Image (tube, rainbow, N blue to C red; front, top):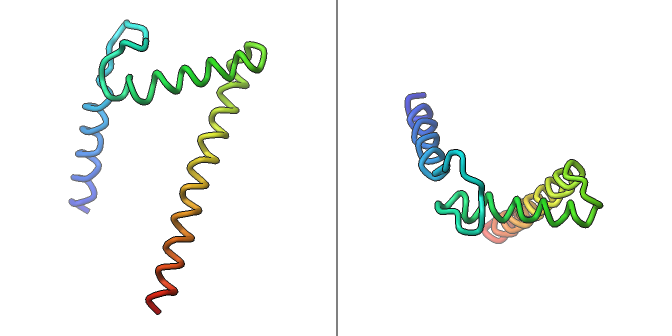
Length: 92
């Protein structure tokens, strides 16, 4: 139990460190920090791009981008499961 609490605390600290939020500044291409540069800006760009394709509907754009991300995660997870099953049958 103590190990789990330590893990949660360390994970929370890592998330806080990586977020590197810049308060009251818009996220732009010149934004600094790992989180802003590699996660937030590309995701906001994608949402804006999809919204333009859907006639300016940001709500629908968020739904579409969320579904796309979930499909990517599902595909990656599914291929990992298939790979693990192949490894298990080869060693048996």
